[in-house]
Image (cartoon, rainbow, N blue to C red):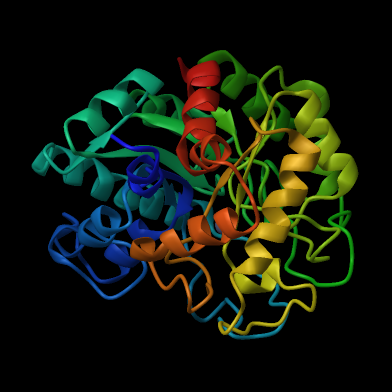
Length: 351
Ligand code: ZN
């Protein structure tokens, strides 16, 4: 193989965050048939294969009741807390979709618990799915649901989404202020951190406010992780990470996955999908500078965000890779960002 054909070989992509399970649940697709057969949206099996995506974190996220939540296009929406019984039921319903998908189609998708299970799935041509919970509203204060879901494959948890729950305070969506928006972890939240440390479950800080972030940083013995967040110095959204937070993540040996949501990329925070993909590389370069080459990865937010038209879907991640090459990123660094850094982090935390 010549050097030029090596450079052109598809770069495998392992992604830090997608919300396809929510959409399958909302459409009543309890076995994920639309994922395997093709669907409207950012991500399905065909689009993953077209974009050389070998796997990623599949989020379980519980929507609010339509009558309680602000409209999706509201500027700076504020989301009220969820009722626990409904949240528990929906958490299990959405997690069950991924479990059925893996049971029905092991040739196409597997739930992976370790880095070596990911490598085996990739070698077999099956998508390697890491089961992730984004917001633990479906979990009670004694954490039984975590024990059960851990046995079912759960390896990553965001204790809060951008709303309050019994574990802590999610960061509200705002532009032009820091993530320091309220109090930190509750007593139950501290117990959740301890259990994640014991069971070696990744703690995702992407939707946590700053006080909660520092509470986890003080208490957790695991590397600090934000699966889908960007650089606050470039785009001052509350969902992005300040220089001090990035230093703490670097010191812990943690990883940040780049979020493709345009309002967390653009310095002006505008929801404009005609956003130049070069802004992604500005964030990636700043993340590499802050975290080193081993601390940066991708966290698209496919099916959960408005992303640049130029990327479009999981089939379009080559646009990000081309932008990295234009900016002078080497092939080894590109491979680490696109896949290897997530796998290395999972190996260090989950085995
Ligand atoms: Zn999210």
